[in-house]
Length: 246
Length: 73
Image: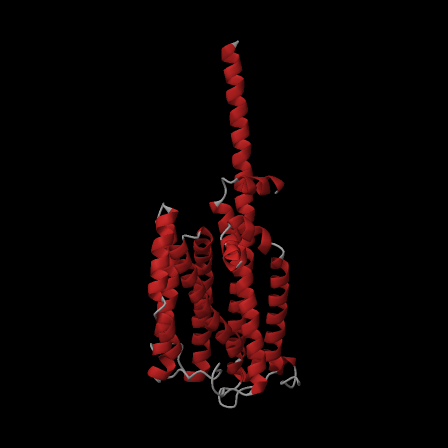
């Protein structure tokens, strides 16, 4: 039963048809939650005792950083599934995930730099966390560039999957960098295991924003994957019918 | 839940941190809007291209058929 589901998931046509109705809901819920979370954090959340109002950047900095790392796992796992089971669809997911991850990583770096100026007195320091995030950004850009560099899609998919898997070693480094090299970057204040050091009045809007960004990520990943499906399946009857319907 | 500022102008200014905070939110929202809209434009572009291609193929087939029938006559 589980395998039947897995094989069906590998069918681009099945995936395209099933995910279509989800899109408006995912879009609506994610945008609504992002607006609620941003308003909560900007206007109703308390200012931080030492950093003042600049700490309100946390509500977009942390979700973009979390999703840039989670998105890398999505991309690398999709690449691994493509390599192991030769599933076309997972390579399409991998390709779709790369530019999303690149933009989210850029946003995490940008918001971190702007937050650094009023907090640390500098836009940028080459500490462990920021450097490993720059490496993540370059890995995403590398995968986007490699996809465009090869005429043969099959070769591009395989090489990108290998690069994505090799680059996965960077994710635990990013996560642990603030503990291994203690510099300007503060250690994680929100923890899955153990007690979080952030006050609930700030933690709740932050958690809401992280949830909103996860739903947003799912939404845009599905949209991009569906476009990739259309491009790669353009010679099939079902795509021709879909194009004819308009 | 209480509004944390005395008035709207202090909400915008945020004790001097306003430009940093609002600048970040603006750039992130532009990035998110791009991520949400770009696949829609890509899809529209793809459908338009495929329709043009199909139209060109049909007109090519018709002209080939017409030239073939005139040669036959």
